[in-house]
Length: 164
Image (cartoon, rainbow, N blue to C red):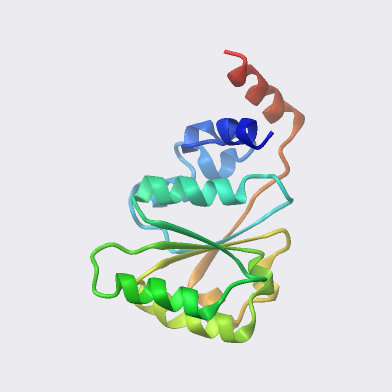
């Protein structure tokens, strides 16, 4: 089943179903990405709505190396290795953190300086609104996007696409 899921995972904005407010050609998120101007962002929505997939698409569109973490097992040393690897580089990595609402204060404090310098792009995902668990400093340096449940119409669209 994992292989089938991988085959169906959207690879570009136009392939995403159920998130037109974020992925349509005139959507602000897509425009920011395609223009290379996306700020640090946090996505929240129900499980399975495409938060991780969207982060992967953003990395691809913006040409950024993609690093995926989960806040529950995130080790600060691993972040620092990535920060050191890209220090002084013209390339900045995209750091994706799932379950971002579970970031400890010390983990947020490690992320804050690189967010301020804009030397990495931080994207977090959560099933609950992360703005209630992030520090004011993190919130002030980022955007918040809500993803919606994938409705029947979007699933039917996906089914039609996969049967072609």
